[in-house]
Length: 423
Image (cartoon, rainbow, N blue to C red; front, top):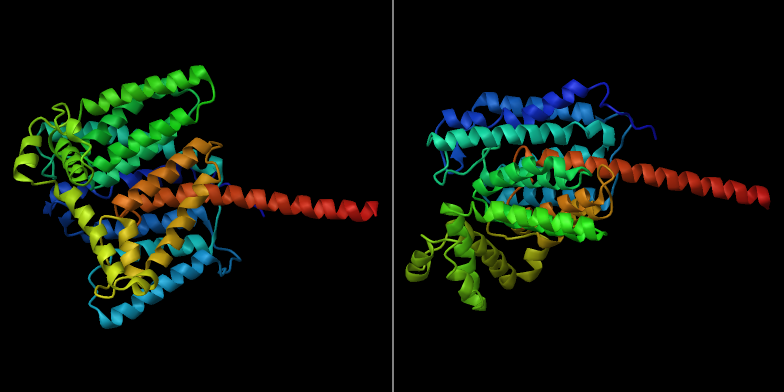
């Protein structure tokens, strides 16, 4: 199989595409009515999304002589769509964002990506440059008290704090996988500052996990010492930026866990975590809506499963068309069943733990862990432009696996031919 390398031919187009994906779409939010994620998308923004999405598929996919394959993931996707179509007959349609997921995913599994390591080599450097600029812009916006989110969260050009935190964590994973990591430390600490200012508790947790994986991946004492030192410096950055709404979320999570486990009393009294919020949480019993809301959505799914285990397992909750929630797992499981949910998500995430991106297993596994964490805490795959990072990185894995499979087949044919000659 000849895999075309579009990078040389489309170098400028690829860079422009990345900038368009991650810069130009959501800054319009500062000029329209917006409140805590609720707004009306203008026509030009929708048209721009359609245009850039079409350009992405033209550049990175091969539509010639390709036919649909009846693989497990394709069957699972088609079954999920069928269940939603049947549910739409009996239930009011309460959500249309799910269309983004299926429209973007179907071409990927039906056609062969034409991308190699060199084809996407401009992606991460361009993305990191964009993030550095956006963090600086958000700092200026916050200083001018013009943030569109009530908690003054950094959102970059992504419109959503959790999305911004996810993208920053993927950039950190890339930088930690580079050989000359010491040169990138200022950029790493700057992006980690941006993660903290996103006020996303999940992003902070994922950042720590990535650093622990980086430490675990070291096989020499000196490399281990360097990794631990970088981790401690990163913790210093994090702890010095746990304030305001982020500290409130952290204390809410600790407080709610303490109600069940009763082992976090010392942390609850740690004034360096949340000095101004902890007394209100303990005395009044109020907690962050983002924390309590996520716990409630899992309880709701469990309640539906306890009432109708077989139905929830195979087709999802029967009282709602689409179970939109701040968790991709809960959303899919409640919408078209736990079985199809696990099949789709596992097929999408598992390859990251068996392959490499840019010849780095650390980067591949880090992105896999990032996707697992965010699918449990955020509805990420249905929101633009997060899914394109998955498509680009997964395409690298898929292309690499295809090359490996073809090489294996060629070796088998060669060995078979040689054995016949010897016989």
